[in-house]
Length: 394
Image (cartoon, rainbow, N blue to C red; front, side, top):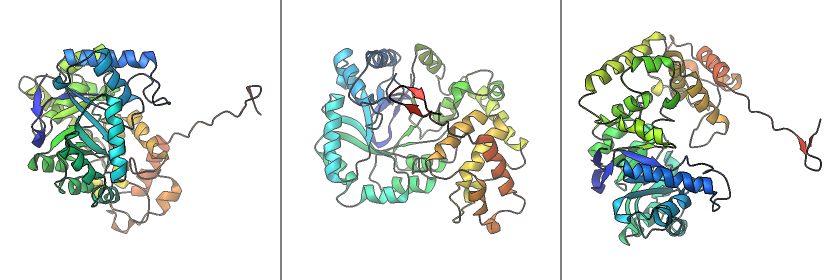
């Protein structure tokens, strides 16, 4: 395991964090009922993580059972010395009162007197940034809790656009940021660079899942990386940036720890082979005549379509055979919200586009229609069941 200084927090944390989203039945309600299988799974993974040098555990109030099962594992089941690890959790309370009540609840659930790293969860647009950081609001209350010693360091997590991330970093209210950045999504590099300039800790969210479902990467990608697994290669790609400090891995079995150990050292002996693989992957972008277009300047106020993201998913499909991953991400647009904003590229939405500022050599409407046809998966209809006799109603 390698350890890195987590920005201005000055804490030396492991380059891999054990994320707490993927324990068995973790997302099942009710929140406070922990099945034996869930507890045993958490016990096993935390024990393996510690034995493999991980000293940082990450969870959130919104991960349903995760905080409670972590609290039991660390304090009742394994009885781990509190000074031997760092704990990160998150929440998105709207007011100062809500903030204090939520943190007090989280402390009890996690069975701890303090939280090492507390992130406001989901500063995903400028409205949320303004609301969270307003005078007398949630972030101000987190700073009061820091003064009281209940929280040691304050940060934020984000799924938002680059500009919002940069604006949030520039408030100087935070000591770390949790964001998306991987080989297959490099849009946020400027935010990572800015965080480094401001000495913020940088935590990479879900590099193996949101970073391309690399645990089931297409053969085309595997063939370009013959010396490592896609997970190992992408991890070294991320860690090659000196401003990145830790990657969150949602490991669920012992084999995942074995694969993790193949990441290190993150520089040196793998450098030349990693670079050769990167060059191969970089060249694949030119296999499609439209994939190399930088779509992030395609702002369109007449439609709810997120054009940069849609064309990014198209690139992954066309150039890297990542159709399943593109489908996986596309379906999250089903309920537009600030986590994955935007709409499906239906004919109705496409008809709203103002194409006057679109490059003439880009057949945008045709590309979007093709994308929707390839990625859209109609939701399965729930069977209509008569609860009295449990028979399908025709």
